[in-house]
Image (cartoon, rainbow, N blue to C red; front, side):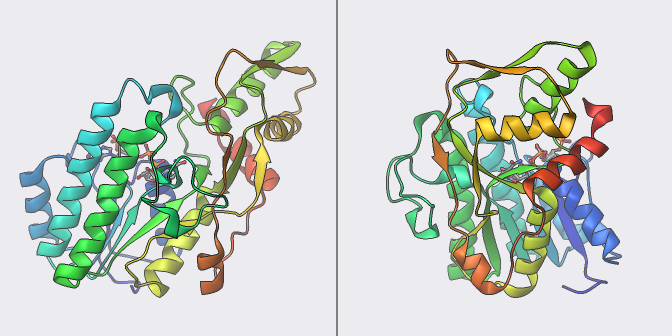
Length: 308
Ligand SMILES: NC(=O)c1ccc[n+]([C@@H]2O[C@H](COP(=O)([O-])OP(=O)(O)OC[C@H]3O[C@@H](n4cnc5c(N)ncnc54)[C@H](OP(=O)(O)O)[C@@H]3O)[C@@H](O)[C@H]2O)c1
């Protein structure tokens, strides 16, 4: 991939895609192609076929998806399956037809079996049953991985799949109905501070542990992998550090300078109690994350206040 290469970023308005777009622009890449979902519905096979045939991208970043969030897992199973299977099948297939040199598929760390030993190693994929609430999304992602691997085996395509841990960043979704934990906490503490509230109530016990990665670190890892990784096997991308939700809430409280108390709503579920990736494969290739969580949260808070 060089500065003149024609690169298609699918999903360039999303958290990952927008960060990818900004990073490639900053690094001097001059031939990036993007389409909004209104201009090109990636579920539409004919439209995707025509797009690839006309544009003939050399490299593809597959960051378009119907992204799963815990609050919507029960309600949106069919959408997770249908939309993700259509988007990724269309892109992967026409990337093969039009001889794309390399494609990077963004899968997710939430596709490992429910009881896989932690930290989660790449070899654990498909070694046991999935978390039922997450099954539809996970099965779609696993199908995408299997497509990349099968197109490599059958047609020699250089398609790779990465499994990011929980991401956060400035261009995140801050809608409380459908957002992830970091934007939810940021929004709650920010509003509580503005309103002069005495306390903030957070769902669960605070005991569940999570790993987080700033999206700029993810994009840095993906650019590194586009240049240096050409294997069939999936690869984890995380920070390697875990933190309880209670510790995360304390950090967020500090970042936002909220003086009140934290209360826990034990009637709400914690979700899985632990989810930590084993990042040794990526680290051994020579990549490590660089943005510490506290620094990352400060960075997001400084730039996302208009979303809050
Ligand atoms: N965020 C995380 O914590 C996380 C963690 C692990 C893995 N990942 C994976 O990383 C990838 C990107 O995630 P993200 O957080 O950046 O998601 P996001 O912010 O929700 O962005 C998704 C993008 O996909 C586009 N899209 C969806 N349906 C489309 C369609 N039919 N046609 C064209 N574009 C469509 C959206 O465009 P519109 O807005 O126009 O619909 C949006 O630009 C996903 O595969 C996700 O599973 C994310």
